[in-house]
Length: 130
Image (cartoon, rainbow, N blue to C red; front, side, top):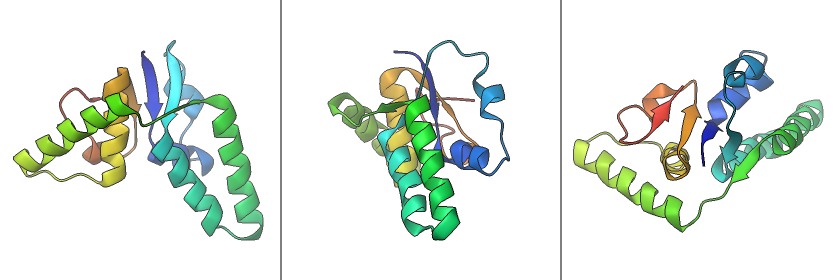
């Protein structure tokens, strides 16, 4: 599989009007997706919201679900995840737990990570960024 995997940071920026998703994905003809953990991170924002904010966040998550494939954490992703965590330990460059899952999902599916948080992904073998 090929395409883009959108990180939570880019989706939150789009929701806030700080990033233009159309511009970021315009030149990609592959499948557009998000990791299942990214969906969970967005849903935490819904759960923590109140009133209008919660409704607005829920509507955004529903749009994301309709627009992008949700890429599951499966056995293949688990193998890539373990390899990336081992690499991070060996090199003394720890990563956030969710970033490592997103990176593993991208690597396992041959996708490019679209992110505003390059530090969470740079230097990980086989992980490409935009």
